[in-house]
Length: 368
Image (cartoon, rainbow, N blue to C red):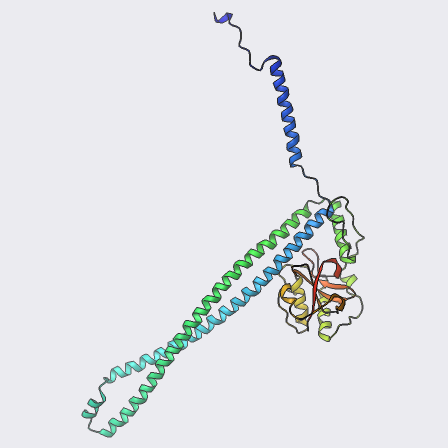
């Protein structure tokens, strides 16, 4: 009987099956199309990449100045802790010496028997000798009281020094934690910038570098960073050859001239975040080193250097003035006259001469 049964037909057989298969293929094609278009992003132009890289470098410089500030505070806390620790060690030695003297005095009294003075007078056959000994004992008592007071003073001093040391150690650890956090932020921003630049083709990289050279040489830049066309100005690089031979600098005083002269001697040296010389600098490290060479001590960061002298307007700028940029006061250069400055721009761009209008002006300070 099984041989006479009709073969069972698939529920999707015939026309229905062909229709279902067609719909499935169409759905798959549509899904593939949407999936591809959903993940495909338009390739950024060189101008867009440059805008993103510039923003990352600016954010990295903000983090760098915060790192510099945290490092300065950590160094101060470390120095204070070590100074207190050394003083506590000296005080502890003096405390131990005073304790030893007090112990020797107590042992001598114990060996003498410590008899009541009236008893000693009754037993002695020579009253004059007793009175002489009593006077010596009184003096010894005074010395003992002084020794006890010395021990108490040293003990209190050691306790205070140890408490202060603990406070500075806690501050040091907090600053070191902030230091690591800002270092991570800097490295993250710089790595993101390197990743963007690595995606450029050789031709795009050439256009990017031409735009950078044009900006540093003439104050212009490539495009507007919003898309469309990649354009670049003619490359005029502001380096040692173009910025170092502009003739004598008319500075308001000898120290300002020395600071400018030092900065000129650093042209071409690399930017390294957190560096203060002599082989590499970040922006505030360069200005600090320049004025140090002129005998003036500046604080470490941009946001403290701006308060290190007298504020001047842009129209009053003179060689040696510190010029600050961006709303967060995250970049600084040294004015050299003629609308130009010497500064350490960013990683990959060495210390160079550049126009002061290539970045948003935030203020200026005259020191010295």
